[in-house]
Length: 202
Length: 90
Image (cartoon, rainbow over all chains, first blue to last red; front, side, top):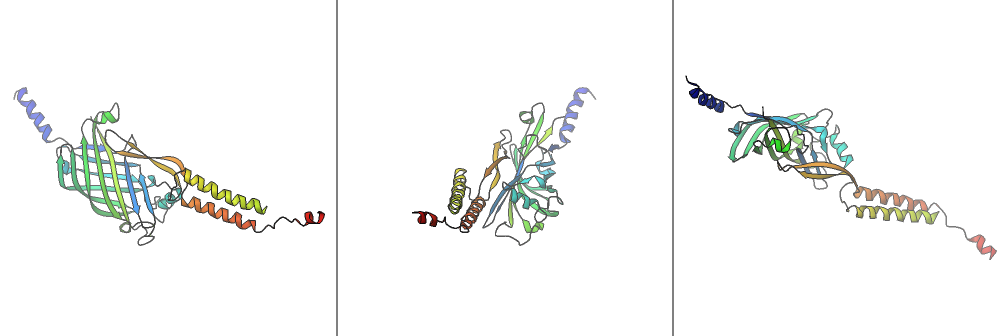
């Protein structure tokens, strides 16, 4: 077989079997964040978490095959009032010393719709909070930014993947003060995640 | 002393209300940090950082009114200045 015939064949097989990209969500810029809101009749609590890590496997040619796990350090959950923060971290509420991680492990995507570099889907996976794991399906948006890593982190070449998700959970599903203080601490928690991960070109 | 305590009680309230109004009349709990949002232009993500800043809330006002009430109440434990000696000399 001549070399001229081999090269197109090799490039074809490479394209067919291209491995999905692995995006690391440890953020050097420190902008990745998860926002939580609890709106009770007597009190509204708004805060955020900043220490977010994890990896997501994403194939631009097959977004439906996306899997991965995002982990939030419970210790990084912050509210502007120091006493509220102390209560939030305490054994009565999140017990961050005993349960240091809040995580969401995506197992499958459904209703996948891709338009240019943006993909929307319903992600099903295991959400773990306060040591309790529950199967959840949440709407997510993935934005694939090819070759944009160098614009964000100089001297590094590669791609970026932005994930956005907004969903609501019930704190009683995760054994957090079930049925208690509902006039001051809402039983429902609105969560909003905005994170960017990087896949460094090899 | 009675008068001094009453004036102090009034000053505590006035100072607390003035501080509360000057810092934006925060009607929530007192905050020791405030959210600062920054936009990452590449990803479009709005990052959140916290800046140390004291923002007195309703609990601050309540504590000031409580302190003022204690000062005002304490003023009743002191008698009015006795002017009897002045009257006898006149």
